[in-house]
Length: 488
Image (cartoon, rainbow, N blue to C red):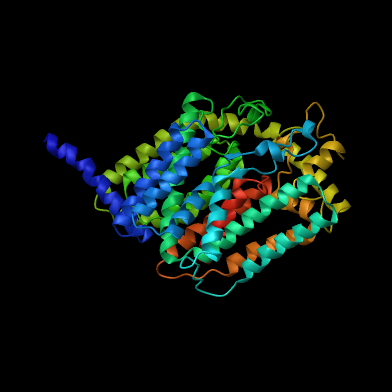
């Protein structure tokens, strides 16, 4: 009997793992085994790494594991580069401090693992014989529009040269180069491994967030960026002392946006299991603990109305129907009981958010500041990294009454942020880029699940970007990563 009790959960996990691989389209192999162990090593290293040198070394050792498993050199760099997209850890940031320093604008750029990996991949792609990319098709319209977007920002910089804009051009060029490299190298089989990587990142961010919630503070990892304000003050501004988890993104809204963009890779898996439903609910709880109301709303649409419709029919046909029908409501009810008190507190603060200096009131003022900049500089904008600088020095509203300017006061609308810094033509190029991505979708048998998940994630990221400043953050990099997957 004890043997039966011991083997049963093992069998459940094995079946879940087999269904998981089948849903992604992967088969058990030496390469897959080493890839998974490489990810396990990488995340374990991040949990125990306290210094930047060890952080950078973790990429090298992870790469050795990937390469040892039969993943080629280019493939290894692609996966390491994709991992680095989600973290803002770098060196030499003090050399790129945005001016004027008294406004506390932070660093405009730094040398990161992403920088080194992208430079190495450029070398492999264009200079090393035998490692050049083998593109499967010609240049597509999104490639043209992203290059036009970069070019227009270059013209904007030339028209009004400034050190802040120069740092912004370095950053935007780096992002564009990474997108082009991903476009050149991502193929059908690579995007399957990339989907697995994104899923693993969801679980890693969830683990960090659970630790933050238990401790009611950052865990202390090297990948947790420091922010000037206490995380609690981000919600105390509306009169509610709620701790908001941030993962490795430094802000709860950014973590929520990441989960909105990445969780479809989990939700869309064709798996019917109580354990898998439990994983889904854990992700829901993490999104809830960011207390991002717009993310709650989009998550409800994304999960319950679109994806779970298919999942319910699968559960009703499952072999363990009675166990599923009993355990699922129990798990859901317990989850509701846990979040209900916090949900009511957050809902009570909605009225406060509508006040002049509540979260919505501040967004309105930031929108006014953005429109004022666009009206003054409609063609080329004020330059990359300069929007906050402009209205911090000469505000057109009473935005900073009783408060000092800082990163918290960036324009909370990515598209208005782009228009203010790049001009209306720059905004149009970026919008055309996104539209062309959605129009370029090609479903194939091997990529249907991955493309669907990427499209849903990109749609969610675009939606929440209307109320968040993602232009100079890892979320823009993730947007480019998802578009590269869609176009693969």
